[in-house]
Length: 171
Image (cartoon, rainbow, N blue to C red; front, side, top):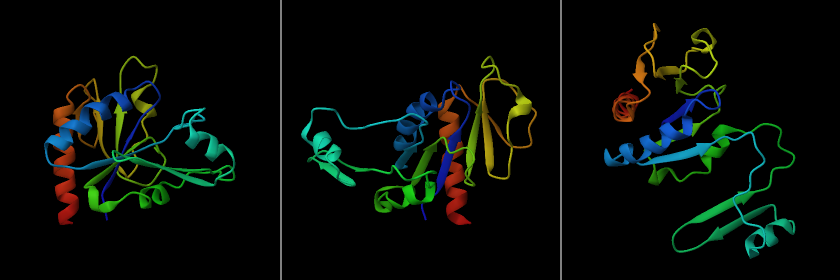
């Protein structure tokens, strides 16, 4: 099974910024990451006016848009109350991945790195350090029982993740 690793934090802490820096660093280390991003907003990856958008809006429950460079599957889920992370992971092709990074899904029972950034209006005491937290990445020193990584040093975080993957693969 492909290791899952969530990056979780409050909005505005820098999840996307960190992942944008981490992904190329992981790739440079020979790790092929996939990504699942959770959003609380109504989102659409298709563009109004395009044929694929119009066909999907005509009522197709699932639509694949494909080209020589990439393909995307869009699935309409109006009756779904909760997103199922493990179902979403099962939609990925494991033969092309060494790791699935997950942005968000902070309440899921999967390994995660929590982010903490001073000055965002949150207190250290608000961090939920459950059994699934493998580290906290922070811009300040924190007295915690899990490793504390430098949020401003993505290379060190990538190395931590590489070591974690190696340990997970030998367990």
